[in-house]
Image (cartoon, rainbow, N blue to C red; front, side, top):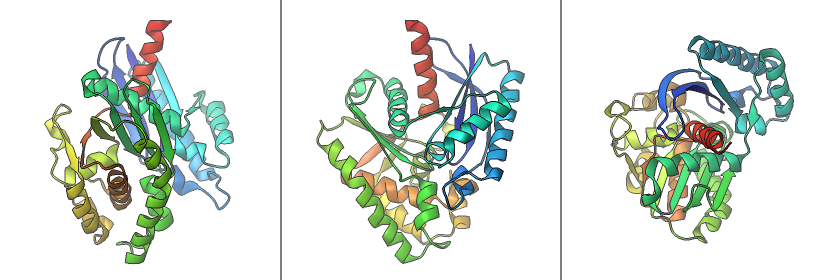
Length: 310
């Protein structure tokens, strides 16, 4: 069957269509997305502005039409940190439903972490043992650890790359003071989840999901996306530390010229590097593998699991 996953994230709004059936690997068919940073459409009270709501509604309409054009049998629609942390998030979801007919399901940070973990487990298999997965989004940072398909620990903290850039990294390139403040803030926020994770069994495999981790791996020497999803890609802490310092001295235009870095995400790449470096250092991780599957694939897999058990 052809299934769509509509992802309302903090950096982009993205519809992915896949061809899949229970027990099979989901095969991407087509996608439709737009760089819409909902967190940039917040007013002083934390509400998503009228303009932000209008752009979101228009994209959801586009996505529904795109899915119908390509004969998708169903569309799973969900929203993450940009909606759940806005003051008027519930009202925005009601408006989208009223004006488009699409019911967006709001995922908690822990649900987001756990569903992404499921995708990682299915990609690497049972032979990978105990897995620790890290995922950097636009608004939040998720961490999950476990030996099964459901993690023993699933945490979410407000350390998304777009959020950190907007709130703490001043200037382009950012000032040295703001970079130090950002590093200090990240270490402070990560202290509790890092301690929680380190109290469990050490992982046999550490993975990273999200566009931010893929970009960081690419600039440190990993294979380009054109090499295919089955090529092993690794991000080493030593390389990341070197590049985090380089990124701090670069403008967003300079970063956009790096391999694997899009202009839309160039400015926030430093924030992602700061979060990734602090997490890897705190958790004692020397290197991690990039997983090509993440939240969208996890939702598809969970959907088919429910179909089989029904």
